Structure formats: C-alpha cells, structure tokens
Length: 336
Image (cartoon, rainbow, N blue to C red; front, side):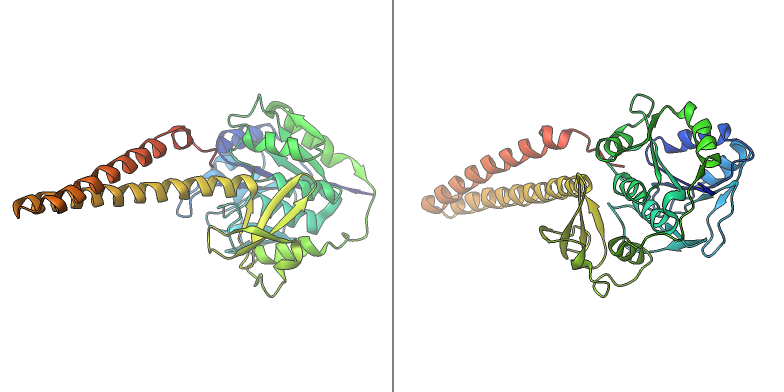
C-alpha cells in the first residue's frame, strides 16, 4: 500500500493570509511535501517562504532548482519561475507564461498529476480569474484528490468557484477545516500503482513549461486550430478541451484559459480605444487650425469643409470617450 505524499496549493489575491493561516494549523508530522504557487510580479521580493516558516511547525523555504522533494516541509515558488515537479525533484523554469502568470498554478498542478498521479492532493485557495482550474482537473483525472476553499470563506472567491464549477472536486472546505483534512488524506492508505500512466498531452505541456520548443513538441496535436491569436506573441493557437474546460495554447508555448484570454482582450481593447481617442482629438485640433488658416486667407470653402470635418471628428471622439469611460471598462476586470 502507498499514501498521498504530495500536496500542491495554488492561490492568488488574498493568498498570503490564507496560506499563513493554513501553515499555522498543519500538524508537525505531516507525511507529505507541500508545494505552493501564488501569483507575484516578476521583480517582487516575495517573503512568503519566511512567513510560512514562522507561522507553523513545518519548515518552509524558497524552492531551488534540482533539489529533492522530501516530506514535512513547504517548497515555495519564486518570482518569474514556474515551479515544477519532475520525478522526485523540483524544477524551476522560465518557460512560457500561462494565463499571464509565471509561476502558474496550472503548471505546478499538471506536473504533479503527471509525476505522482494518485499520490497528489491539489488545493485551490482564494484568488481571481481561474488559474488552477485546468491543473486541478488534471490532478483529478490522474486519480488525485481535488480540494477547493469554499466561496463564502475565500477573500477572493473566483479561483475556487471556477475550479468547483469545472472539476468534480472531492472537498469544498473552509480554511479552518483544511489542516485536518490534509492530515487525514496523507495518512490514508491507497492502492499502490506501478508508475503513473502516460498521458501524451500532459507530457507535451509539462515539457513546454520546462522551456522546450512547443513547435518541435507538436503543440498542434493538443487540439484543433482556434480562431484566436496569442496576445503574448500573436502566434496561432489551438483549442484544448478538458471536460467543461476550454483553454488555448500557441505554438511558442503560451497558454490561456478562456477567462484569461477574455481579460487580456478587454485590456487591449481599452488601450486601443484610448489610442484612437488621442488620434481623433489631435486630428480635430489640426482641423480647427486649418479652419482658422483658411479664414485668414479668405478661403470660405476650405474653412467650411475643414469645420465640417472637425465637427464630425469631434462627434466620433465623443462617442469613443463615452465608450471607453462606460461600464465595460469602468468595472474592474476579474484580474489577478
């Protein structure tokens, strides 16, 4: 018999507080390694490892590329590197971003599902958008246990709610209940499995996360061509279907959930509209100057023509301004 010895946890907004509270409640003799990804800017001097180390009985430290995974400690992702499980060791990678994030929760979860199968417990905590949903689906698909924080308990419920909606989760829990559930799950005996059943698509995506060439790995085999282009590199993308989840990956390796793709599209549209507004206002100013010049040289036809163009340009600019200041962009996007 075997037991579950890998716990992978993903969080975003509100995650530092949630993880600190979780660390304080975990048992000293937890028979599993805990790997943690939170979203953080590339240049962020994250102190999460030190906070977790001080909060509870388990040792916590920043993950180091190539180090062996041992039970009874936290491995914390570092800024601008994916945290990946490869066999019995940690890998850190500067591979393509997933849903604008590096480190990505989905990358960690998929690598755990591929390497450890039924011995994995995946946990999605507070956060925005839906990073972690596809990775939790992979964990469940490979026989692992899927847990999400309850929406009522999460400071930012979008991540756990999206996961619960799209994955057949085993537990929806309040944070205070989680330490005991993890202790019990890691003590339960499970049927031993010789190795982990191969999954070609999962292996391709794990190798992309490690920085391998997506085109050489045949990204196009992951799904049919989509209508969309990658907002990171503008390459063509394929659509990947997993249960009720639809996501996208380009041939250079960038990955997006549908929600993350929509979030980026809204941002790009807003930038484009502001740029258009700037051009329209500059064009109106120029036309007003041409009106005055035409009047100065006693050319009423030109003055009338330029004045008409200026009025129409002003009308269009007003419409664009109303649009860019309207409810579509006034509402804060469900970002990280």
